[in-house]
Figure 1 (cartoon, helix red, strand yellow):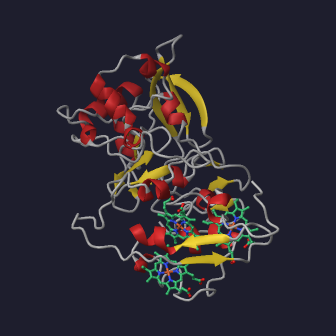
Figure 2 (cartoon, rainbow, N blue to C red):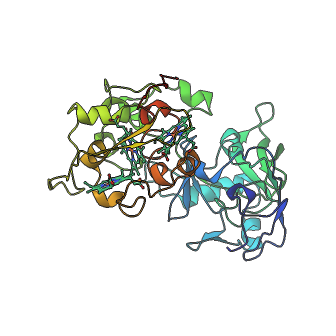
Figure 3 (tube, helix red, strand yellow):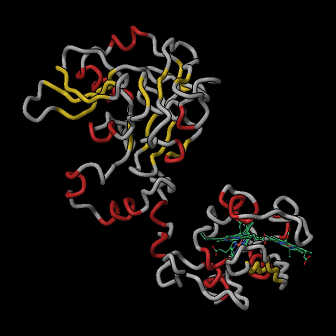
Amino acid sequence: MIGKRVLIGGLCGALTCVAGGLSAAEQQQCVDSGRASTPTERFAIFDDGTVRDRVTGLLWKRCAVGQSWDGTTCREAPRKQVKSWFSWQGAKAMVARLNDPSQKHQWRMPSISELKTLVESRCQKPAINLELFPNAPAWPFWSSSELSSNPDYVWRIDFSSGKLGTDLKTNYSYYVRLVKGEAPKLDGRTMAKPRSAEEEEIAARNDGIHDIENPDLTLLQRYDQATLGFPLDTRDQVDWAKVLLDGIIEPRTTREGDQVEMAVWDHTIIFKDTQGMPWVRFPHKLHSMWLACENCHDQFFETKTGTADISMQSIYTGQHCGACHGRVAFSPNSCERCHSELYPGVQKWW
Ligand code: HEC
Ligand code: HEC
Ligand code: HEC
């Protein structure tokens, strides 16, 4: 897969990325300007050759039907296999054969609005993110959406250019990319359909993080329910420090649940090189209430004040405090939570 990368990952040179891999002789072409429509970070990538779109909630196969996932990339479909299910009807019948009818959630052909969410607007040949869909054919893909004015025609997307169009069902041999799940935001009809209480519960967890196929899914507490009434910070995010200090939660000290005593250390450090901003108050106490010393020492900080060359840039790029803040702890944009130490001459500025 080396070399087969799109610009979205920032790994290619100016304008083109060589499509290496097994057979793709063509070069993907990407422009370096504008925003990626399908950034890799939007997707959760799984080992079994699927990706979940965190925005739509849909689960996609990384390989087109006929290609096979070898753990790293998609092996090319023999041309004759694609030909063997010539026509949209043929493709549909083939999708039905691939499914196990006893399973509740079936792989299916995507609707046109679902398929459209995979078009990478910055790239052509193919117009798709190759980090997510390696070796993707630059060729049209069928959708399940028939043209309402003439059901002999079906919507499809040409993944060479990324353009939508319609074609006669019977006349073409196109690829299919399978999808699972529902995208309520994309399809007015699914939105309007009344849901059972269980379907509502599942939908509420269909956030790209939960495994919606897990039969015990609805036993898990929902985030919105679990955090109901918790104190919020100025950015309306849960103030986890306050939640902990007020005793609203009592986290396990280990994953397995054996209650090991936390080594809480009440030692505050004030960072003063803040260029006119209030100083930064770093409380060891709050941090060591739920982090072991080894979480920070010595991988992020040495046990000697003034050693680390901390700056806002280092924080925003994920170093020092930014190893957690902006990831698993409150964002670096909540300035006043760190810059909380006023001194003569510096009043509240926010
Ligand atoms: C969330 C991260 C974090 C955790 C957890 C943490 N520390 Fe620190 N520690 C720091 C930072 C930041 C500094 C200052 C480093 C610098 O200025 O370069 C520091 C400094 C120190 C210092 C030097 C203090 C001084 O005043 O010179 C000691 C000693 C220390 N830590 C011990 C501990 C111990 C013991 C624990 C566990 C109870 C612990 N730390 C947990 C981040 C952490
Ligand atoms: C997670 C804690 C944290 C947050 C949130 C935070 N800062 Fe900082 N900031 C620091 C630390 C630590 C330093 C380094 C101070 C030192 O080295 O003495 C710093 C330094 C600075 C400096 C000095 C110049 C520099 O870049 O190092 C400025 C200016 C600054 N912060 C502004 C801000 C603004 C504006 C915000 C909100 C957008 C903000 N900070 C949010 C921790 C934070
Ligand atoms: C290893 C992870 C980690 C690192 C590194 C870390 N923090 Fe935190 N910090 C947390 C967590 C977790 C919380 C509590 C959760 C939250 O408030 O989002 C927290 C909370 C805080 C609070 C809130 C305290 C309160 O009582 O409201 C401040 C202030 C803070 N951190 C400053 C810093 C500064 C400054 C640095 C760098 C010198 C830093 N943190 C480095 C994990 C970290």
